[in-house]
Length: 108
Image (tube, rainbow, N blue to C red; front, top):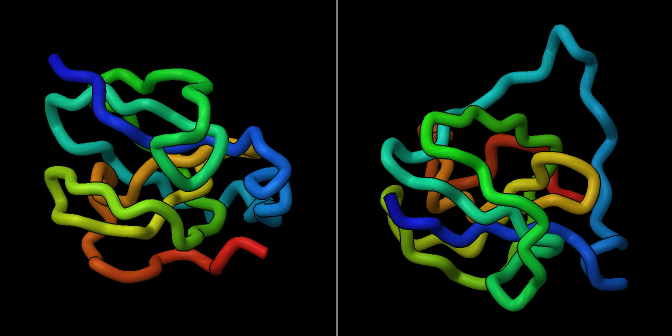
């Protein structure tokens, strides 16, 4: 299985992107594309450091979303990055959200 790119926040720019935690009962998770291990990055782009790698079959919460580097993946090409934890981002091109647009608030 190939390891696919996703971003995590680590630079000053990425650290400025934060999300308000949602209430546990309101938090929805989304599946990663089947058969893909995904790199979680410290910011919204492949030039940010890899924080961890999620195994195929994982589900992720999306606290907020932001614009970043454009990435081609199983769900098309997207410049939307999903904040899945404090300072951790994955490309929306690898997350099955059911939408080509935003499904969560924009990161502030």
